[in-house]
Length: 418
Image (cartoon, rainbow, N blue to C red; front, side, top):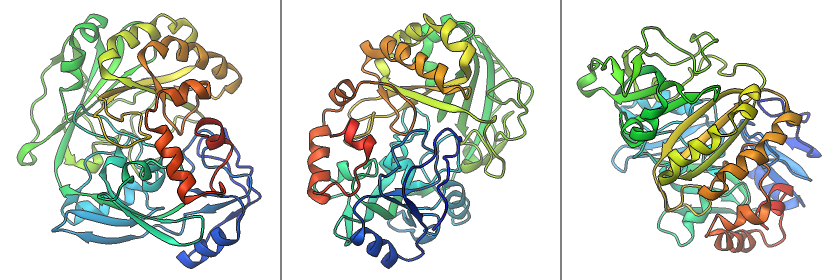
């Protein structure tokens, strides 16, 4: 048992009565069997109370093993507490890769998948789309395995922690590949207006950064496949943005030491897809995060809507990132059935001020069916949020089937799902 920790950012402290650190599946089963209320805790990268419990919490810190690689079936099975950084190094050494990664490699596989966390790329689905099977300790304390061909599996993967205590996941893997990363500076607003689709498809993964101090975008990070492990000479301009001649941090005032290699340097996929290196702390300090995900067809209109209130946003902002995500079939994914664009905000650590801005942003983005990232900060009315997820009634029935007494429910699920 451990004292109640805060989350990674330090803006939330868990209110659970006890936090347990089991080392064996049987211990998890016993805890589930005898508990009235319980939730699982991963690497604590959520910014809200989605992982908290009015009862106890189970930390998955000891469930961090890579169990099996199936080269022929092209899958890997891991314990739920494994972090992407450790998994990626191990996979690459075996000649395999994942299809995509989030900005941070420090997050757990289970937590990222349960909240539909994503990377970037017009053809790349969110991280949970790679899951082919999960093992869960359900409310009766029994181990239940769900596989991709099972009815309702699309509701199991992005579970928001409501299905049970996730213990194992099986993920699709692919042959390892090499990448390069180039950064462009000062993208003109007209280019974003007229060429967003071309810009967002200019690499395997593309991220645009802005501080919303002006209509221009500060940086465009383009991550491209390097055929035959040979870097390709980058064009000096990308729709008016100039190729950077030095390594950059997304927040231009900060050192790039913590960032993954740029300037067209060729390297393994797992050292280019994230923005930040595994061996360094990626944060610029204490921060808050929000993100809104909307159909890609509304991208440019949504940018204009945010630009209209940038004088309110910019003083509280560290940086904002724009990414694209391909459609998936996962019920509670913001990208269910539609290609999306995500608008991410990294805020200064001032919740009193930020919570005044979020309703303004949500109002501006409401015409575009914007959905919040489940693990970040938002103020959206529950009824409105629920109206944006067409499969929510099916998801609710799934949770009620496997957890009829609400053992894994908490205030977050009660407010936004039930």
